Length: 260
Image 1 (cartoon, one colour):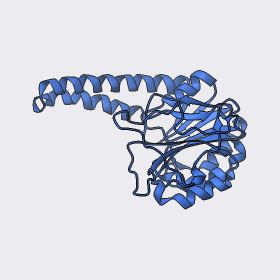
Image 2 (cartoon, rainbow, N blue to C red):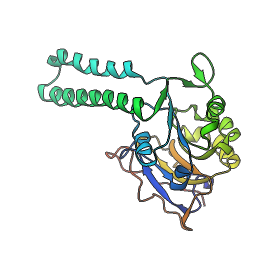
Image 3 (cartoon, helix red, strand yellow):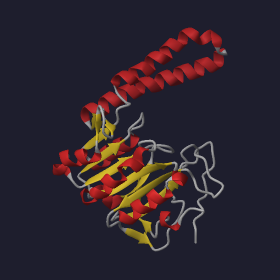
Image 4 (tube, one colour):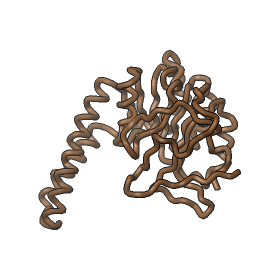
């Protein structure tokens, strides 16, 4: 069963930012409106959340991810074009569908990336952490003092636990957090300690329906959203929230079971 500390206590004023299904997050409205900027740690090839944030709130956006750049997206285009010359190894109808779909997606992705990060947001090609080419969260906060408080979005594939202490140290500079937790069953103590030391309310929880669920009914991948002084809609929390969507619509949602 999922520990009780991972269940929001009330229903809050939530909105959805980002694309349908995977890539969208539910966040508390006032925590976004009170922020002066968005900091994203971990970008990948989906910036729909950031685009929605920019369209609706017109605030600065800074994204940190060393795995994404122009050349990487160009390579995707070249890969799909090169695949054309190997089409004889696949059934014609399968190749045709996959080729044109993937080619269109990669070209659109490149144009969208170029437009968004040239005009609406800044992409900093740095890994989170120390070492060559890395940047620590404390350093990010130190360089962004003039635009605090910030909203923080995190999806760094399991490294989120390494920055828990830095988040706690800088929480006075935050209005809210949206974070994707990985390997949840292995880090329950760290998650509990983080929540207990964070001066924010847990306003939303949502499982990634493609992730493994343990024999104790604990999803190993969870999205959590926190907010400082959130607006309460009701004393009775509703899980799932009506704005929730499965990460992968081909699979059913995971039904969360909490400890009493």
